[in-house]
Image (cartoon, rainbow, N blue to C red; front, top):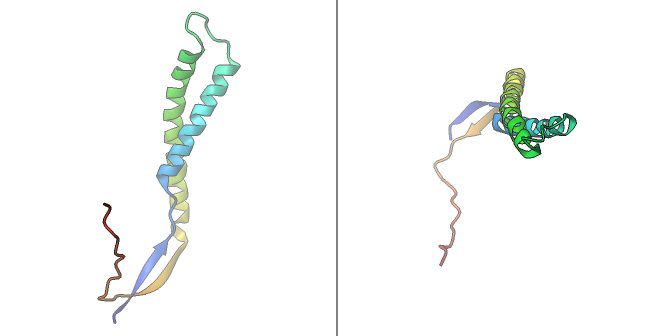
Length: 98
């Protein structure tokens, strides 16, 4: 059976960093809304919504940038593994749903 060397590299999931950044951005927007005086003519919730839109977008971008930066930093941590190709394929049989 033929054997092949493959390169293995662990990479961070960028989407997870982006969602975490967006969540942190919304939390910071809530803190800003509570810490600053709110115009009574506008109200608390519209003010929070305004800040949350910007917090979400900025957090999403910054989280993505952190993920890309960590991805660039981990490119040096690679490993080499040997795999063996086989002709057989193990499949799991499932019962059809009735």
